[in-house]
Image (cartoon, rainbow over all chains, first blue to last red; front, side):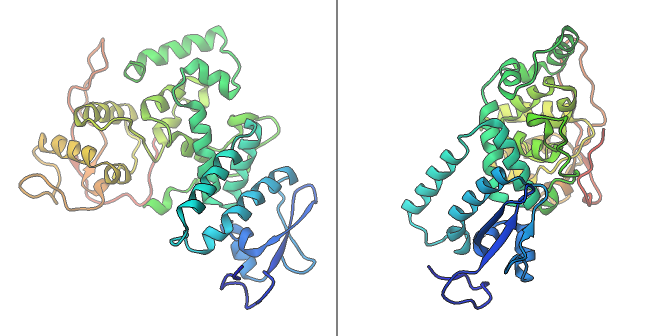
Length: 174
Length: 167
């Protein structure tokens, strides 16, 4: 595997960095993969995260971070090629297959993931999860959306408010 | 302007009390709503108080039709309901030529619209927000049905530096 040019001239073995989750688990990962995060990329370019130091991520727990890194490792080669202009259709199909399966997870994990993607500024991951959540809403009635997203059933008072809003925005319910 | 579309809201406010999707900051909820057909995005306003006005501040609006007439009627509703809240229509228009045509039609109905437009009403300006000010000043609503009676598109002097969201 070719080392990315930004790899500090570290030929041969790819440069590794260490990330530390909020619950103090250490993750060693290729710098190229971690650099999918705009936030981490700056630190890594400054030479951070190497050796025994590690980059602390107080907002991300280990379960979420391991999932985030799974995404980054899978997407790093394509990202290193600048959006992979020479990627084959097979490669792209494989990434798509990976993405679809990747977000086929519990809602609570989706929300942790999108928060982490937001905090770490991993645009592709944030969009992937946002799309997934949108797909869960699409084509459903307001009541079905409520249930899907885990909102409690409305109180009579809330139901009255809902009805008033549906009247007000009647065109959207035609 | 598109680079400004990042979520401005404070992040990492996911306290232990908030749970599920409601724990997400507004910027992320808007990102999600951006992938949903606008009609349905409006429907989310019945979910909870916090969601009531959320769709109005979405920076991206997804429209599930390509029929110009439907789009036009849809946009009239949408602009009306969004009232004073401004949003960047350029990406929407760029991605949908039929919607752009619909806007040209809308503009032609109005005497003083876009200063960039040539005789046939085609606009060469790339930023539509600088052509049209989407604040609806003289809108009258029929009492029974919510039908837009008049849509005024007024010329705007300068492009707003930030997308301003009015309550």
